[in-house]
Image (cartoon, rainbow, N blue to C red; front, side):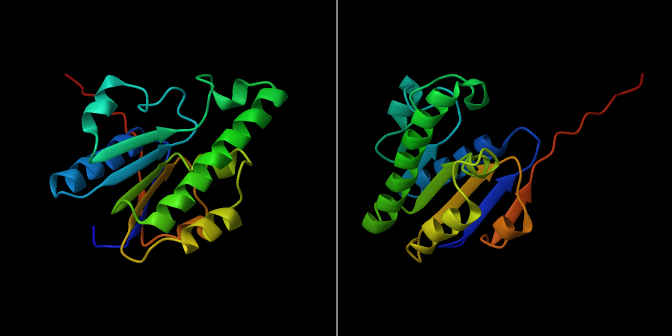
Length: 166
């Protein structure tokens, strides 16, 4: 991945976040610093012993308080979590301002659009503040043409099931 690229890993298939994590490990092996902000991931990786061992090269953040699926929360709890998620978006903005990493992964950020937590325009405004040399990877299930236009590269991940006949 060349410096400053914005990539999207999308699709119904499994493996988008692991692919992004693989890019994070590659960057860390080159001596670069990586920040991962996870959205809508339940508990995610942020509070695990594994994540702590990745530091300081890879730092993982999660701003949501609930481990439950966002769609199952009460309206009141959703409102609280939306504010927590917005704190995560503001943290990404801070990362842009400080330039503290060479790769920023916004894991499941595209699903924030699907859940009407942010708009495509808000995502576009966020990305406009990105330092030129910083790489960005965004993951999520669905994308549209407007979201794809924000990226240099879009990868669609799909799970294929094959039957092997004897």
